[in-house]
Length: 298
Image (tube, rainbow, N blue to C red; front, side):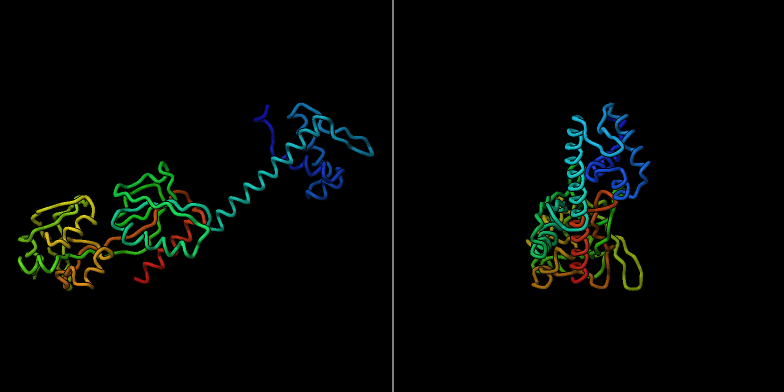
């Protein structure tokens, strides 16, 4: 029986009891008196009990009607509160922002960004999960993922935050003992540090200022499954590596690493915020805007 109940009639019933008459309830609801009477009659029919006894002058709740009215008032109040909470989540950043990203980007960019974002929004809490595997956002209950590189096809929504350059780099000590490559072809003779998770970790295409492209296959001496580890090996002088600019900028400024082949460029990658659902909550929208603005200032 319950599944046949039209829940909209609960609001009409509560309004009728509160107004005290069909005429007053019709005015309050913007309905005709006949429509209010029809809603009540159908509700009683659906429930199988009489809710009101009425005469030409007055109406009164039956015993079942009084119990049902108290329950309806509670249900409608809880429904209104639930709608208000959903609206607050939509319009006001609140709760816990749970996000995931890769090790290198999470440590270098996302974690410092969250520190600043938290100062602007002290009502929020953060749960950052570092993982170099592409996370299942729905199964992991993530609000969003910050993904670096080239997006895979999926049913998720994506917002581009910015991009990054890839740079061939080496430590000064390594270059002092092995020489500095002047052309892309020279890299084939150098010790190469590979990021194993890339699609082609040993094959790179360099584009000169005049648009000429040269593809070089490298000679690997070591590999690691994330950029942070390859970065550490490059700093230690183990060889040459291609690393993202956000990971090596400070080292280049300090002289701990040296950029190679400045007249050539490698393919650039994108930085995206990926999230499930068409309407992300305010905490997700605000963080996306914040991170996009922060990256634009780099």
